Image 1 (tube, helix red, strand yellow):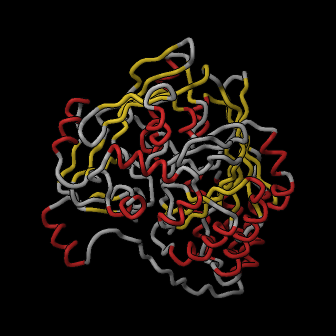
Image 2 (cartoon, helix red, strand yellow):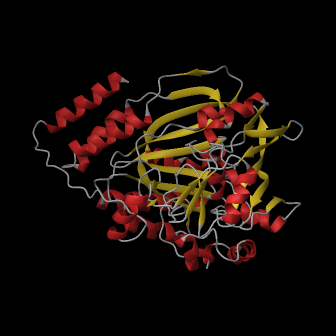
Length: 468
C-alpha cells in the first residue's frame, strides 16, 4: 500500500513541477429539509436534531422513541399524535424520515428470532443491522442470498427502499422476503405473505415506511456459503466491451469507474470451496481521499489528471479475497457522500453510462467519486424499481461537503431519458405523478396505503406529496 502511495505522489510531483495549481472554489452546501432559518433556530433550543448519514437531511422531532418490545411499540403508535416515522440507520438521502412529530427506532428490536432448516428461512427482527445478520445466520447454517455493499442499514430500512446488491440472477433484498409482520396506524399487527393478506404483502415488500412499521421479516436464505471475490483494474472501454459477458458469467458482478481517469475496476464474486485467504487490499476510504487530493492537485489540467490516474491505476495488482459471503459483500464507508442512483433497463447500461460520463467529464471537473454500475434481476413487487424488467443500476456520488445539486440536475435527465426509476433512498426530483407513470401498480399501492392508514399517520411532507 505504501509503495502505491509513493508511486502516485511521484507522478503528481512530476506533473506539478512546471505548473501553478490554483485553489479550487467549491460550493459546500447541503440540502436541508425543514422550516425557515428562524423556525429552525427556535427548534434547536428545545429539541435534539436528527440527521441522516451524509447530513443532507435533518429534522427536530418532538419525540424520539426506541421501544424494547412489540407491545410497547403498539402502544406508542396507537397513542401517538401527529406524524410517526420509523427510522433505521439514516443511510437514505431522500426525506423519508424528517418529521417534527415522532420518530421511532427499532434499534432495540434486533436479532434472529427463529429459523427453519428444512426450507432455509429465518425470522428476524426488523431493527437488525445487515452487518449483524451474517454471524447469527451462520450459526444456524444459513446465509442471506445476496447483500448490498454497505451493511450498516437496518433490515427494515433496506427492504423499504428496495436496497439491492448485484447479480444478473439475483433480485433486490425485498424479493427474498417470504413473510413479514406489519404494525398499522391503529396498533393492529398483521401477518403478511403470499398466502395471508397477499395484497398488503405485495405493497409492504417495498413500502417506504408508508403503510405502517414492519416489525419482523421472514427471509428466504441459502445454506452457508463462501465467496471468492476478485477485483481487477482495466480501461473502462475494456469493461464496457465485455460487460454482458461479465454479468452473465459471474454470480455477482459490478464495476466502478473513476472520473477523469479512463480506468475502472471490476468486482466479481463466485461461490467457492477454497479456504479463506486474501491478497493485499486497497482501502476504499483511503482511495476516496486520495482521489480528492489528486483532484485538488491537478484541477488545472484534466488531461494530466487522467494521465496520472491511469498510470497509477494500471499499476494496481488484482485483489483476491476468499471469505464467508457476508464478510465479502460489504465494505466500510467512512468517507461520506450524497448519491443519485437510477435503475434502467439492462440493455441501456452502455449508452446511458457513456452519456453520463461525457456530461460529467465535460462540465464537472470537480467530481472525483467513482460511478458504480450494477445489474439486478427483475421481480414482481409493486414498488420495486426492478419490477417487470431486467435492470442495471448506475450511481453517481458527490462528496458530502460539496454541492450536489448542479451535478444531479445535469445527469438526472439522462436517467429519465432511458426510462430510469430512482432508487427510493437516493436523491431524485420525481413527483408522485411522474412516479405513477413508471409503476403499473402505483394506484394499487395507494389504495392499500389508504386502507391501512386513512388519516396519514405515517405520511411526512415528502410522502404526503407522493401518495396524497
